[in-house]
Length: 141
Length: 382
Picture 1 (cartoon, rainbow over the protein chains, first blue to last red):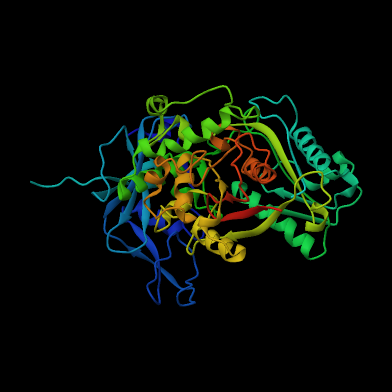
Picture 2: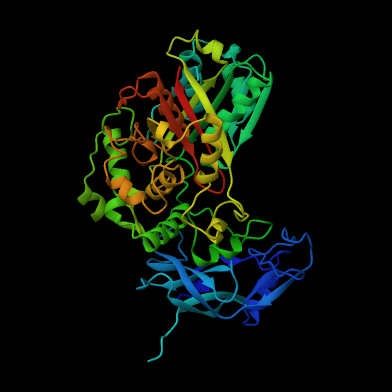
């Protein structure tokens, strides 16, 4: 995996009032999504208000580290010096909850198929900054 | 729609954006048989660098009773017409000028990553969930959408190809088009370099320096116009429920990637017009990318969801087909003026002056429905 620290990669803002909890958890190797504390509605991308039940109290729910591949693209045309081509961007629907989809990046060109199992790992891209990343699950046997 | 005007479309205009806007506006005002003093309303696109006061002064307008701004970007053009209609019907203005001007090739280029600085996101942009992964351009967003459509419905590149091929043939007949002199074959399309799979070079729109402008007035005034009257049958805006926040990248979190805001916009538009897809003679689809057109053809009801590929390949969208599209060449081959050239071409079709005129056409659909929301309108020959 290319180290964006060396190439001036783009780092996430991890201190936003609505989304910091996601990055705090990633730093601890946990994958979380924002949910309504009252009715359990998924509030992803993370936000404060639940339009399902009208409440403002949310919680960070720990998710399984597995998912299904929703879509992907192999980028061949370079647009940023820190991201040499080719690389593959994956969109993953996280298992266990409806409506939590996350990105990942895989170096090079991958042989992928829709809905295949994926699992998460955490990439340290700067001191105390971790990106949840996804790679194809290895199927046993 | 009493006046239309454009500049030339090029890769390097050698002029300021204000000069381009002024030239297109003067052309539209002149086309309407008016002078700048007749204009009392202005509508701009939020991504334009030319402001209302810039044009009031540059054109020598005497008053500005109504001004408005619509966005984001390519979502604007049909909604800008809607603003003009609302201003006129509510008595806030009598003759409203709409414009879009940009040096999209020689100035700021949309395909270049706009990401700067060490950290990205926060403050309601949600870009922290996207940029760090190397997702940096609209083309990559639509590539992910295209791959989902191909996986789910079996859509093939050879089918998608028909959209850029048809746009190129229309551009070859349009002397104003940037690609007027360059033909495109299926083999050339398939062998062109991959930009972001499954989208190849010719699935991407052009980059253009240029400007377009239109004058909207009362229907009674249109009867005095030097041109055949072109009436606005209906205009609509729309959003999907749960569209996700942010400017562009969070749209990838929507449950169904293969449906655009074109669908709810179409429902409202057809209801207001008292029409359906079977009543549309010719269409100008917003084509930032080929896949954007394919999805809209489904969402506007010209074929079922998932059948956009076979519909595109059936010949229906070519001249002589049931729904000729993008008859000026569109963004893919005429030029990228952020959807405003689609409105201009719609007016030309209704006047009977297109360089690829659809014989007997009396209704034209114009769409501005990429993402996150959308707008669209139906024009009618008066």
